[in-house]
Length: 229
Ligand code: ADP
Ligand code: MG
Image 1: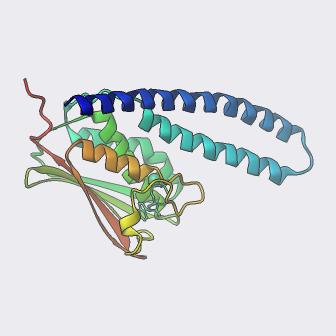
Image 2 (image 1 turned 30 degrees about the horizontal axis):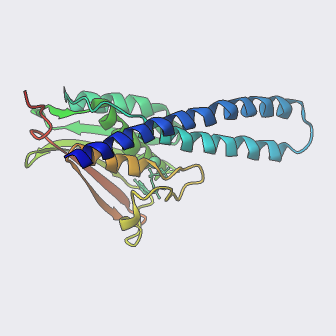
Image 3 (image 1 turned 120 degrees about the vertical axis):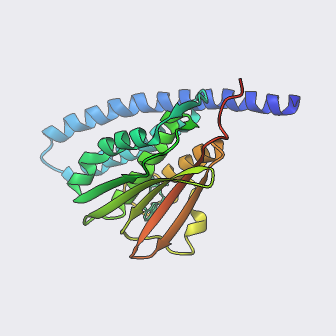
């Protein structure tokens, strides 16, 4: 309807504005960071202060960065996608981080998996977030298993870790912005995942036990997002 149209117009203007503002925040930050580093290299005192200032700037930077991703008015360009290939790519992106923290990644897929229709870059972002969270849940190392299978009209990607787990009372708050238990976290990753999966008419299921591990399952419909021709 007309009302809905007007609303989405407003949203995209707002999104563009937000992306612009985010950009304008990042540029001066980069310059401040550079000068701070220069001063740090010359300073013989107050070294801790420099470290704190630099890491606080990095924190602002990553929050602004995640907001830019959200705000960017992205074209919802649905393409037919082989999730197996997409996941292999995601694993290669996070390989170094996994090795550095002693995490092994195992990937298994059903042989005759159908392709799905999705905005491949967005789904890639969801999987990166999921795998990153799984790795970060095991700071002293461990293994992450990723399974791909077909189930009831969906392709299901499961990310299984044996990390810190999530307590029952916290489960309902997942996906709320800025909820994080990590020193360097933004608490925006899951919110973005939920938004993207919702746009794909999919679902996210969580199974978690404190100190035992967590399974995130992403369900993406096989037929639903086909463009009508
Ligand atoms: P961030 O990773 O920046 O903290 P997210 O939105 O990705 O933000 O996650 C929010 C919070 O959800 C995390 O800080 C963590 O407490 C919890 N969480 C997410 N995934 C997992 C997981 N696999 N195991 C344990 N906790 C998790
Ligand atoms: Mg995260």
